[in-house]
Length: 89
Image 1 (tube, rainbow, N blue to C red):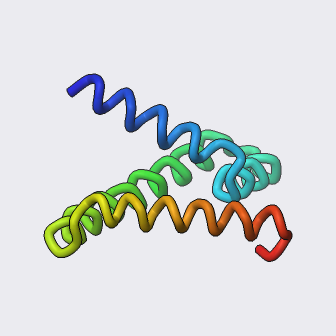
Image 2: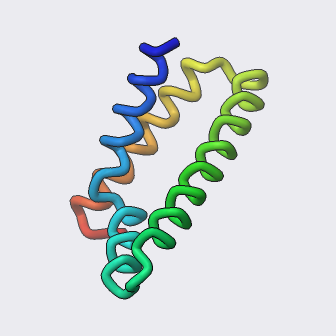
């Protein structure tokens, strides 16, 4: 169980570094004197979006084999990466 918690933490932590959510949070913190409120709000948002992802992943896995979901996610990440490199998004 701890191994799964750790691998999930590392994966999500690294995926979130430098993304637009983190940049938006930095902007909000830079423009606010209430840093703890920004931290609480952004933390709650990440928790809620993670809950949606877990629930959706659970439902999708009952309809679609997990290996297809994983391959689809990989293709989506690669596509987004290419579009970012080409300044298309």
